[in-house]
Each structure stands twice: as C-alpha cells, then as structure tokens.
Image (cartoon, rainbow, N blue to C red; front, side):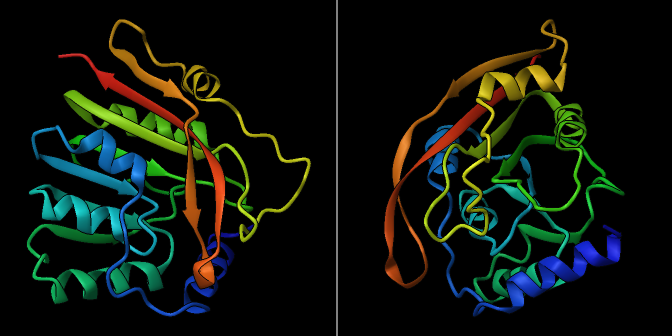
Length: 208
C-alpha cells in the first residue's frame, strides 16, 4: 500500500470518531514512567494524544508522531487548549519512509500495530538507537484483541515481549531488557464497554 493510502487509511480512522477533549494515558506508560526524571520523550503513533499530554504534565518535552494528519493536528490543538504547547511538538511521519530527528531519554510505542505493511522491527530498532545513554524504550503491544478492536482475525498471533526483543537484534552489551511480561487489565472501549485484555510489555534501557 502506498504512503498516500496509509495516510488516507489512518486519517479516515481518526476522522470517523469525535476528537478527544482530554484523552487518557495508557496504563503501562504511567506505571513505568512515573518514577523517572523528566527529559525528552518521543511518542511513536501518538493517536489521540493521551500519552503525550500526560508526559507533558509530568514535565517531559514530547515529540508526538503519527502518520495521520488528523491525529497530529487534533493533538496540537489539544496541547494549546491545555496550555501544554511549549511541551508538545507534533510531527506527521510515515515511519515506513522517515523517522523523527533528535535524541531522547524515553521512546514509547504503544500498540504500534497496523493492517498495512510496516517493518516494525526496523522502526523499533531505530527507536532504540535514538535513545540517549540511560534512556528507555517502552514497547507495549496487544497480547489479545478487545471486542471492539479493528483486528478480529482469530488467527492473529501476538509475539511475546522477549520475541519482540530478539527481533530487534540489539547488542546486549549496550541495551538491557528491564521488563518483559504480559499483564492483564480491564480496558474500556467505545460506549463504555469493558473487557479484560492482555498487554505485552517490553522495557529496554540503553547503557550509560
């Protein structure tokens, strides 16, 4: 699928639902990052912007990236309305074609799944390489499908966090896996529906 088609696909996804006014952060982000000193963060696939706004409120300077122009424009407007524009920069990137510039203390990739072609391992490997020494890469993947998920294929396979880590092929002398587990939580979907889902959580730290 072409870059234009990818942009159109995700623009349509976001345009089909109302703009969020105060999106919630992901639970795995808040539990992982709460104790870290604020620095510069990169949010890959920022979506509605809950993670970026939460990080900004904690004092982080956030570069928020999405392939969808609708998503990044909405998040930029939200950051302004919440007086966080000086802490949130939004950038549109198709990660198949380009990657954000800079060095970061934290890179987050929550549910970076797509029905389109994407070399995820290459993207996440690039994310590890833009970390500053001591920085962390937090990858949170679906370990199961919620009833409202766009992906209801019963044959879908969910690689575990250690399998994801192995696929990144990072030098163990430089990058260390700090967390690799599959916790469960109660997720809330459209219309207030709830369901138990599994997350695959991988936290990698770049050595000092």
